[in-house]
Length: 290
Image (cartoon, rainbow, N blue to C red; front, side, top):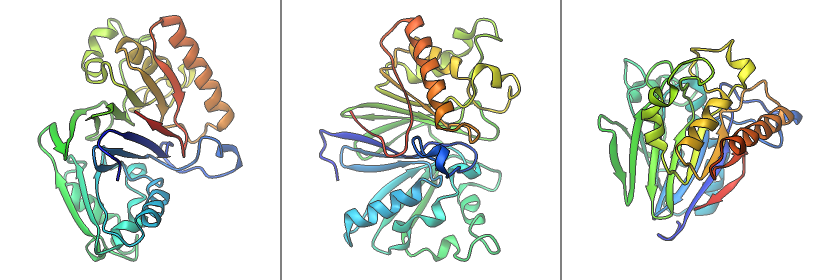
């Protein structure tokens, strides 16, 4: 586990909606949402898309038979944020403790939703049959702690119940908002006021990972779908004085070349707006030290 003075974030899945493996997505990756955070002696996983499968394999190799304790934060229970959990190897080891935290993602509750996707005929092993010590906690409060890491949550604009998380660590703050549709600056008046809650939530973050699925032209056909327009998310990040912005939830129809084009466009917007925000596109395997 990391020493208290270090904080590290690693991307294991950066796509939205559906995994897209293949030669045209090799650079940025084709797995759905999953991040790993090591901070202040804690191992925290953000979402359980298909990226959690290779993460689980890497953790099993790293700990090599030693007990593992981790916390999995779920933003919401749409398929691309939970579909990797049945293949998460540490959950099959009785010595491990897996604490799953989220908010009510469906009327039947978080635990029932996660169990439902592993019922027959969808999956051969039921959630209750996984040997790991799995604790599922459905939260009501929007501030809590994971060891020394303080966490804030915020309800975001996405169909159903979805949240974003802000982690306050000794190395800096990390904001993760994988699915969100802000008010659009090109289409709605007085957007700074209407986006104020989001801007305040991410203000001065050291690292922001946020939904930037569509470019400005694509967004017109997807208004109300619950995903961000690139131009808007960059403007919001610069307004909030975010230090590093990572474009996230890459559209399954966007190959590596398209994501790179969007990144270049985002950097031009950030430069035009001024400020010091560094803009990157989330990429599987990339590690960031805070």
